[in-house]
Image 1 (cartoon, helix red, strand yellow):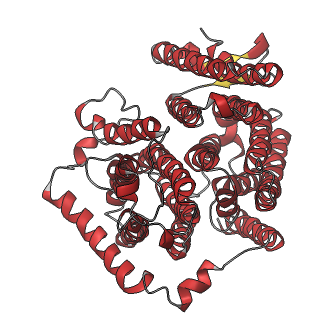
Image 2: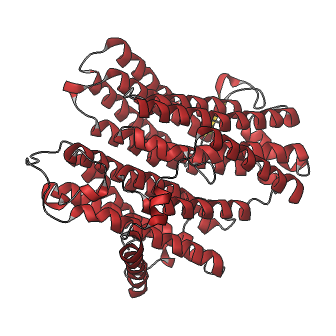
Length: 536
């Protein structure tokens, strides 16, 4: 039983190697069998681990805690594990086509799953570094998989900028090892209070968090994300936006837990970083005409909202941020998958050239509406729950409350612009008879609806003891707040965004070179050093 986490990590990795070696058309079904096995074992492990604390920690090889490799799980890691399993199920079903199966693509897809599951469960800082670096390399390959110029350049941009972040992360690990003589995260956390006033510990913290900022696409080092999304296949974008970026946020949670004994005052700093990320992300999003770029910058903005929750020391706000990670993964995966189908059918990414979707693809359009309503926070859909915990959690702080509120207006503006594709006459010369991925889109849309309501009726999935009684989605106030946000978003779209003025066109053309991105990253790391070492 205690070794099941290791088995869960290696099943997709071994399966990917078998698929790569045999290259048989039936290997796709092998991937599905492996996925089913992972799902069953994860549920079986979780069912027992909640009642038996000894199952939460596995020391591989029986070595002492300070020198051995160990795997550790808790409620947060298991939530991410189940989210990863669900995401890979949807991706595998989305790409299902035995006649056009690309064995290499399936190999990298499954290998990435094993690596990501390892990152979620490791209790060893060096292994965390290895898993992050492997994730970076495999995602780069998936971004550049088409082997065309733009995809290759975007993949290289992603690889080099993220590698720069990972190198700072590694230097932070070296400082931790120098101070504690171990890189075991649990041991370091238990003894962190002994070095609370250490300048070296502060440097380790800022270096590791600077690396995490790149992985999470936080301000000002988020520029790789729109480039990656624009060039990658839509299913890769769905996985990248829905889950891989969240790996950086997961590391943010784990690192702050590990450094909690040092009492580093990080809350306000990362709230401001989250706010800047949210505002710049939504500002660039609403200026775009490329639907994938709109969704990519929206992901940046939503990461900012998540960070505004995770940075709080209030438990309800913090867990609201975690809940928004789950919810954002669902509706953004759905939106990117839909974007891929739109491009395939209309042969265009330009939102102004796509009209009549509701007549062309009625079921796809219905699922898109559900996703758009969820991300804008309609009551009884999943986005309402997490966004409300973050928004109303700041009611006692007027300026923070209004910062979140205005970002929500920007999100509404963006998806009002996005929704213009639904209306108008058909612009196709042929009918769309069947869309193979309808069932996948329907499953994700159903998950959005279920997660928007299940917490209101049962505590079965409420791992973090969030007080859902504070939310009243059926109340007049809840709907009034939503329609005020949507109404203001419509007005801003109609009178500003739709006019496509000079300022909007200038923002749309914004492009940051790799050289300048690295300069900004260095300045950002230096600013973090000044703040965490010399100011606080």
